[in-house]
Length: 114
Length: 119
Image (cartoon, rainbow over all chains, first blue to last red; front, side, top):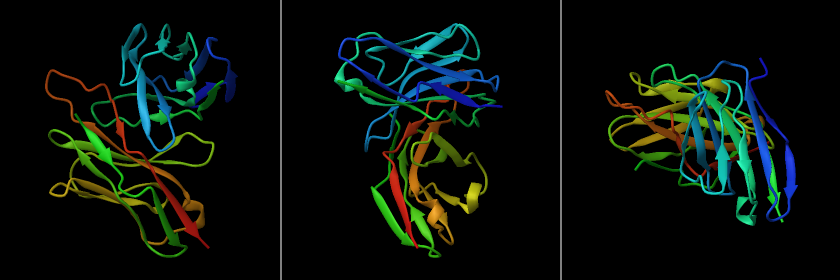
């Protein structure tokens, strides 16, 4: 299994541009998550999904959108990039078998907005 | 609201010495507690978790953590540190699901502790 994969690894955007961060998992996990990691701040949950067709907001959803058309894929969309969105973005997935699930993380996408 | 605190931004230890990375939490009821490690330019890797039962949890790479309910702590420990243990460590908490409800696996992370093990 490849686990959780993310593309691209790095990206530089200009203010106002749009882009989609791709995330895929091949573990047949029901739950998928998007986090952003800012220096010294830990990880903040942006959006999550409990299955295909179902998504919900996390702690910091403003400026982002998601969709979940398949179990495997969970793309994150930035519509109008702003410097405040400069961060490292991590996708994660979990099976959520009861309450004891473990989240598995992708390698991250480092995004800079100038 | 749940929260996690890692009171030390950095921990420095000599190779071969024991190490402790501290974590305290605040959550309603009994929590699930996790430790993750992040190596440079990599995603987070799961180390261990506390679900129930024995307060001492053993995990990957020789790490263990002790759950202390009265002190609301979940400190990460290792008896003998290795240089290769140098990384960023995150503690995370997740509330237990109530009957009829669900927490959807949402984790709350601490801000992270940089562990440096010197040769």
